Length: 116
Image 1: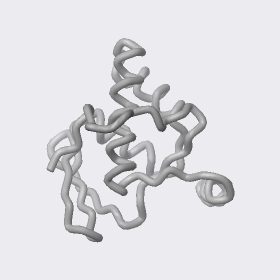
Image 2: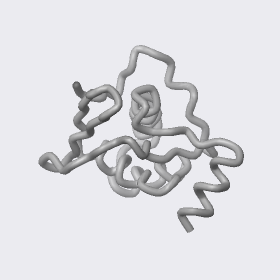
Image 3: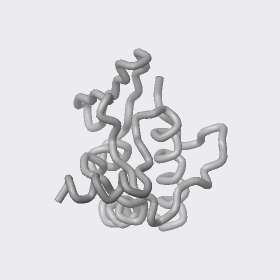
Image 4: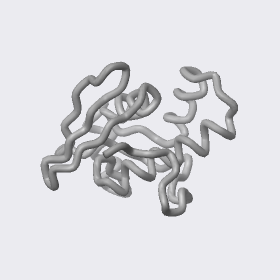
């Protein structure tokens, strides 16, 4: 199964200050210039292209949506509107799949302190 940048649900949940991290249950391995992802909880597998892999690798430590956008603006040199819409869709798909966790409140402070 592949994560697509056009999920069948609204891509409105991402805010600049939203903090994300990779689920501790997720397993990943290189696949060409992208990544293969595996969720052992339900046996689902996913593939990410090069851009998806950049996003994934940036979330190895808790990261804000705005930091992900800034990283992609530098790495991809794309039109900002395209990057924003594509990033929102990918992050939403990763959150919906359970591979990304949206960290909030005390969890965000603890994760940020742990990452430092």
